[in-house]
Amino acid sequence: MIPRYTRREMGRIWSEQARFQKWLEVEIATAEVEASLGVIPAEAAKAIRERGAFEVERIQAIEAEVRHDVIAFTQNVAEHVGIEARYLHYGLTSNDIIDTAQALQIRDAVGLLEKDLAQLGEVLKRRAREFRATPMVGRTHGVHAEPITFGLKFANWYSENVRNQRRLRAAGEDLRVGKISGAVGTFAHLGPEVEAKICERLGLRAAAISNQVIQRDRHAAFLCTLAIVGATLEKIALEIRHLQRTEVREAEEFFSEKQKGSSAMPHKRNPITTEQICGLARVLRGNAQAGLENVALWHERDISHSSVERIVLADSCILLDYLLAKTTDILDRLLVYPERMQANLDLTHGLVFSGQLLLDLTEAGVSREDAYRLVQRNAMETWRTGKDFRQLIESDPEITSRVKPETIAAAFDLKRHLRNVDKVIDRALAESSEG
Image (cartoon, rainbow, N blue to C red; front, side, top):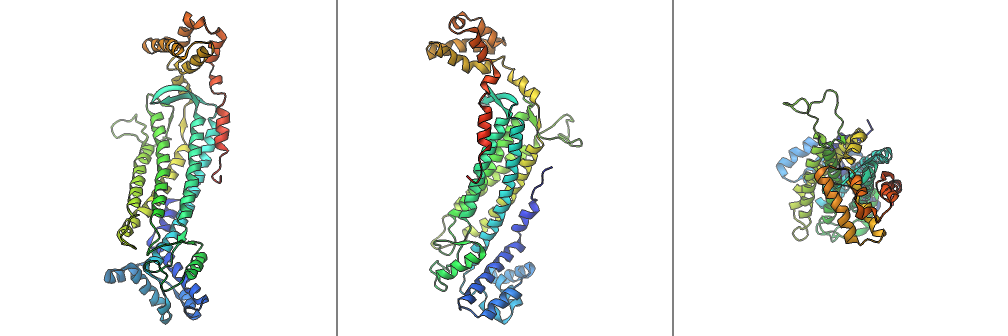
């Protein structure tokens, strides 16, 4: 089993304890910057840092009475700080704290997701190399097309994972911003220079402009990015589900000795985890839709986005962390059957080589329309009767009179079809998320 970060760790980032701790970090940073600029007494900032504390249960009890979470929080912290608490939350509005602290939570969550994606990439790269020369049939529209290798699939997934790493990093960076601009973004009580120093102390950038909130296009882009990553995981899972079908059975999820597939049919080995991944990817897309709905708010801000974000940001991060761990584990322990891949490649009696014959005939001077007709005529005979395609081609005088026997033999050479696969895989695996 490969090491991974647990869902518990991601869950802690989005816990009530962690949320209020981030609020306190923003309050402390604000007080210390204000003290350094002479806005509040240095003794007050010192007291807020040294004695600032809270209890989740106490905040909840106060909020039940005042019906305002930030007021409940500051009141609880003030109980610990004492008289100097009159300078707590000085010059701030609620969302100066909420949005800036939420940026810190998202930054931490992105850090874990980046590690998850890196672990997935390591497994994809290893298995792409392992199966780089394992031939199988490629399928388009679910129908046999031309030969590929199983490693090519893994390399393709690896390349997509690299793009997802870049997307996540960009979306996370776009949200690594805070705001201390006041109730409507005018800095009526504290200047932009105060905001800049507070954000810098917290490891954030100051948003170039805000109203009462950081604009929600940033959050929508983040949720859409998580949904895209989820769509990639669904794509991988769906492929495995297809490959695990009894009629195909080229690969399947690991099935433990004590595992059961059906309450009624003891023979069943079902792709339950990949089905779960496909289902839960839909939740990420639904959350992304909710994020898009949050972009449009009344005037300088309303509260319609707040309740939604309490669900979708935490749930999407926790869910994607879970799906990445599941997908990585599935691919790490995926059962692969090369003999079955070869059997399925041979299933259509050589039809997968028809494309090269088409090209060979056109190179011999046959019009493309006539070449297509000649090859398709024999291909349809193979479909109908199951006769060997190569034998039909070699028995067709209209074809053998135009191309040499060695040309026909070369058209059916599997190695010739796969001669560039190594180059493609190496090119894909050379990609870096830093690029």
